[in-house]
View 1 (cartoon, one colour):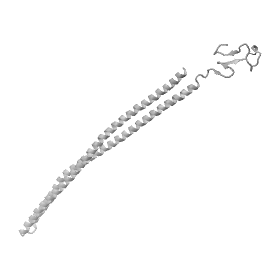
View 2 (tube, rainbow, N blue to C red; view 1 turned 30 degrees about the vertical axis):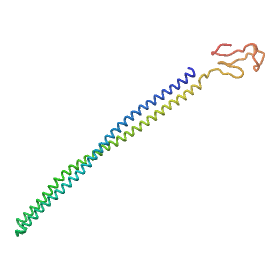
View 3 (cartoon, one colour; view 1 turned 90 degrees about the vertical axis):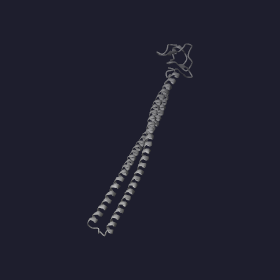
Length: 243
């Protein structure tokens, strides 16, 4: 493989590896965002339901208070009417010069009993409606709290999913950068050893996969001088032929 092929292959492999890692992370981030959107939609509906139930509870509470007020006023009005009849009864007894003893006393006692019984019964019956309405208000309030809890829980889940999406994207970027760095280090390592057995030259001669061996029998001049008319012997080993 030539140097150009080595560079293109190493960089191309690093690019493909980094892009695959980032695309995988991006796909995972989109899944987290889809989950977050679902959580947010559920939270929105639940929050709307919680607000609606809270309004129902408020209306029911007001209705229960009004029913209790009306029941109390009606009972008090009924009691006053009965007390008025009791007063009239006492006045008749006094006008007839009858002392409040014997049958007269029993009649007054019966009247008082009827007053207390009717008052308690009417107040109880009137308050039953108020208590029932107040119970509905409590149910509405409990439902509101439940939907509000679910909404807050889904909002927290949505926040967690959004954070996971950001983490996935950050991890994808890191993986892409690591792939590029790995490719760069690999390319640098390969280039440092590329063509390590090639030719080298210096100012006085050349060596091609071996070294020149001076044969003094073929020249009368020293190694520091120039070669004689005959050529030197080249020791090329198994990499080349004699020259």
